[in-house]
Length: 229
Figure 1 (cartoon, one colour):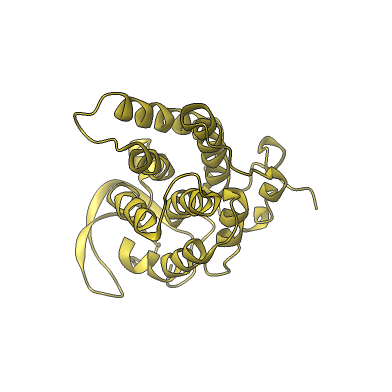
Figure 2: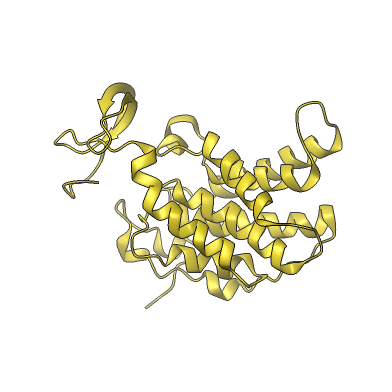
């Protein structure tokens, strides 16, 4: 994060102070030298680029939009910035496809909801990857789901459950970029089944070109998105 050392993941939270903004909070991830960066400081540059990418996208293919966002050199190989990519790419593709009256306001709402539940390292600490609530937020916005609704909430939770299951099948070690791709596949299939919306899905764009950057070791042939050089 700061000194380039391999990160340490603590089993229990400790009181940490962000080296950039000096905010003190409970955290789980430091480097061996004790450096700590809060989620806000860790995400802000990448989130700005992600937002620009999804708001300005012209494609109706969420995979194409996501791959463009994931190609940003400043994006960490792993991190909850990928949750914003998944939700943002899906909503941007829907806006460009045009069946539903999606605007930047709906995309902004999805990103705001994603922020509430996508936190760095919590995929391992709670078993919930931030991409799950990101895709769930998309379907909640699209269906009008909220506490107390019937089919809308059921549909949203069913899709989120499928995304979680798909991500589970790709663990060992975790890879946020693979999770984005699998989450979007579930989302595209669910849009067709539940809302009768057919999005472009050129999965050829989902061939990973980031394998050498994985800090815990790429799964290579065990990953369906592994690209042989």
